[in-house]
Length: 386
Image 1 (cartoon, rainbow, N blue to C red):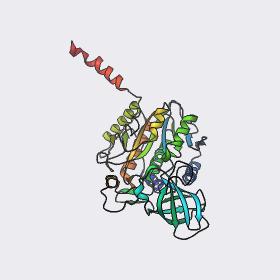
Image 2: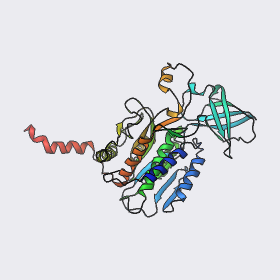
Image 3: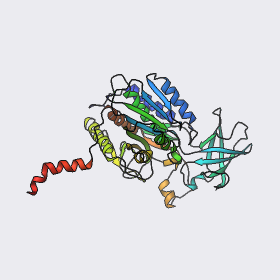
Image 4: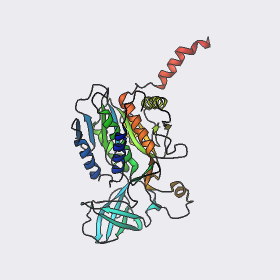
């Protein structure tokens, strides 16, 4: 990248793609993020200059041990994805599963899943019967599943994911079991890895990796209640958000002004947009977007409500929450049964997100409110009224 962004080498780009492929195929669910956390622990351990802690909600916080003074900038991403948890062993081949996340009912009909036991052995199964919302206490729907082969190694608490295959790059797009939000996490790590080089960051840049987002932002709420992040921080939440015609995959990372719940901090959103404009001006062909993205909600709404200056940057996502042909299924115009599939994002969007985060970590201008802009306009131009 040119301009005042830090150069990212080709070997670093390859590392970033490796982390992207690895993370987006790790089985994870709300409250059952241990496999992703183990991957992160190895990544952090290879960087002894970092201080890594956990708050009472189990969120991971990472900062440079000798960070410069100044107002910190946070990159935040969540570690879970919509998935099942084994609630009961009915018989050696029959399981009761709860689903933690948001997926439309038609996608569960006779769908294939894979159960991941404590030894990381995989066990294919098929859902059957209608969902039962009252088979056990709690907020989640329950489903019955029949294992292809009976086993005694599956236990209560194991994670089950959709049977959609592994992560791979095809014609410039990453197709993966769980882009949301593990692709966001990969981008946060990639940018952070560049920014922790000696002498690079002019102000503190930190990471917050949250849990249980898919069931109502529980980890983020816990972080806000505990004050895990400095109250003066500027928070950039990273997400994968459902792509629409006006927010296309391949159109670049999206500076998200809000979601279906709220509008984010306008000054910080504008500051990031300004950095995006500067990166685009210095790099021919570099693309970005600025959109509302009201198809879902994200943790930036939590942080704003808690009093943080916060916004979101996201990747446009295909097959949102593994729901293929979603628009037709919602409209009930799909020709066949609803099918689950891998999510997908553009590799160029992912690399663009890393570029933008590095640029923001290098320099993030102070927020200028709309009121400040109107005052400046009045001072400069009100003379025409006289």
